[in-house]
Image 1 (cartoon, rainbow, N blue to C red):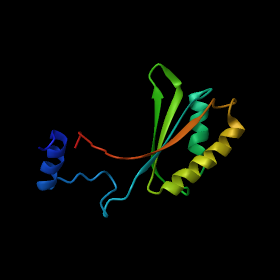
Image 2: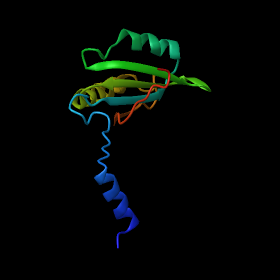
Image 3: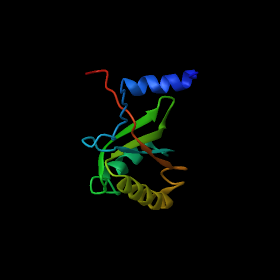
Image 4: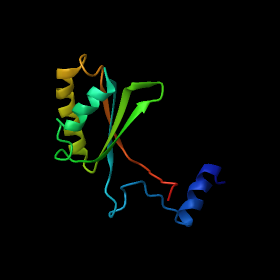
Length: 126
């Protein structure tokens, strides 16, 4: 007798349903997101320094970025930086940690950074 879980696997194997996660096909590169978040002393002062780009984002492999603020606290920011290469994302995070050690407690407070692999993206506006 076949258990329902086994039937499920056999059924989907026989009709050859293949699910490719983002970056698994040879024509689609992997995408990595470095998520950084922290409170700032003053958003406009922080943004001016961010815009001066002391971390050389483009040269470090950043493909694009977004900045978000909390609705109820505009001095709390989240930055999402997209990379096509994991080692570039890791290197950039290490650079940011060195930079943060010079400004933590002055312009920013308790910054956190994590790297994620983009699994899926969909744009319903198109």
